[in-house]
Image (tube, rainbow, N blue to C red):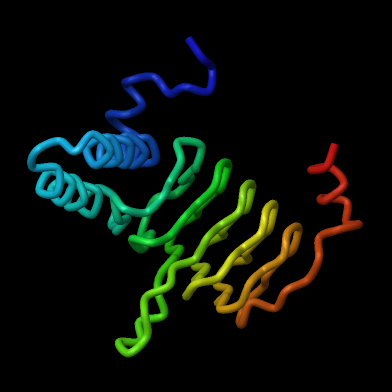
Length: 170
């Protein structure tokens, strides 16, 4: 058995594994064009909401390697794209700007990025690879690779040359 692969008993009791399993089922249903997939995905979305209080669109791109350590109150809009190895903590929002007169635009999150509790990323923006979005940060502009965005207005600083960036590079 793969040591990273959760046991089936963990899927029954741990929200983070239940959420990942349901997201995989939704993606499979949509990819295979199963008759009634939209209704089934809606029912599974309701189940995610009941179990975790999360609203994650089945149309959002969420790879299997994305982790949800504390899956409570997470909102991920339909056009959002997450790359591999992203970590999403509780109460994170990835969504559109919400302006009715402008086409919807959703964020894209780069590989290895960590989104800490309460982070809000709004609009058609790109968060680069190996970034850190701090707790309660509001991000409305692009974030370059290897950067950190801190609260309250997503102030961006480079992680290059820091001890943590050196560890990640090796």
